[in-house]
Image (tube, rainbow, N blue to C red; front, side, top):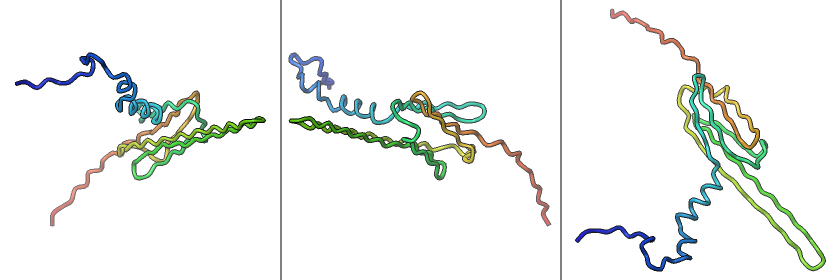
Length: 141
């Protein structure tokens, strides 16, 4: 007897609701919209982090650096209320995310810089200048 992997597409009557409310589909959709995409790039002078976050303002970001861990987070909430003679419509939304990156030892943490424009947050992480290693000879007495 051999083991055959079950494939949903081989079902004669696939479940429409099962496909629409598939756990994998839901988790992919929520992760895609709750955590912005990030590109990391190494240059000769340092590293760059590019975070795609359209619709936010520079005031919405909180960037912190503690013990070689860079954390980028944001929280945004909006509310609107519309009152007419016979109805009231109240809408609100809340979104937040947090991303953390462990930085290498050669980062100059005093010179980290961040800019936000056109929906993209760019963080520059310059490398420390290399310090020449000093050889010390110890005489044995």
